[in-house]
Image 1 (cartoon, rainbow, N blue to C red):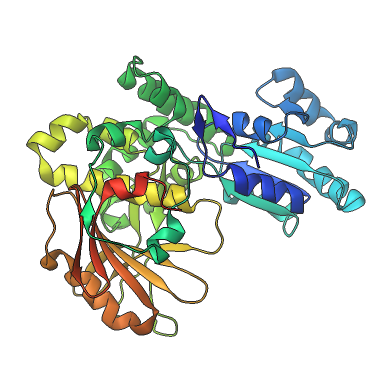
Image 2: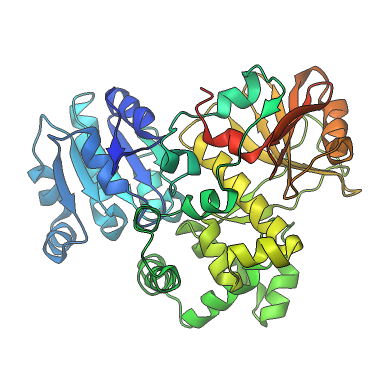
Length: 417
């Protein structure tokens, strides 16, 4: 396919989205606001018919007569319906239209809410709809290396060498929403403040009734101090003085609007025993939002508070890998932790059982001691263990043991496909 380029930046998801549109009657492209969903949707098919429910007129018409709205969409071309979560009334009629016209009927829906937050949509279109998530720019996308490195993490032939980190902090700063990444003169604090307030006041309201929206912001602030750690829900809602039911509801809303996500723990097949933790780890989809909520400057963290920087760096590496793997059903991302505290931050797993273990270190050097958890994972996984990686803030790609390497974070940002 021709590359889908946004201000000279190619998106990882472009080829996968085009492939989906050739094989499925309907696709739902979701993800955080301001990640470029509309731009990507329109660029994969310049001849598509486009309707946005950000338009009050279009939204009112779809809500008043959902059947008439769906029936009025032109046949014979792709129909892009933007911010579809605003009008759930049309979902049953989309289902009927798809069933009448398979395989010719094509719809590309976009939305700023996770489909799991829209049960009317997921139930109406189950088995008919492919779901893809567009996240903020990865550093690789910003730098112009759009190839997905997920397979390379499993299969690339690694050789000892040096990789300049390309300005680690600058790379972390550019791994964000396209508008901020492409316009460096923007007041980031104001932009992020406006962004979060819009989500809490608009998108949350579209999904659920929230009486005290200030509690959502307080929850975000508290969770920012727990990024990269095991999430103890009881501790969080106790700290906020919030009852458990309200807390779980509010946390789910923040996940559904793509502010944060939970990473589930890895367990070997048929070994669901007490040695493996069952608690998730918490991350923010955008590391710049995380530092904003922490009220910290990235450069200051790097210089003066390496412990806090370690959590931010881990969030960055995890989200970078999630961006590369986005849209793939053949790679499952989790983490490894035993009850004794042995932990590897990321586990990548293929359907055939092959795994790659990743430990994240914010230091500029790496040693065999940093790979102890990966060695434990290797012992448990056996022949399924393809390799272990200590991804760190330094510059040297070097072996630390059999099938275990120290890998600069910059390796993720070059074309290893």
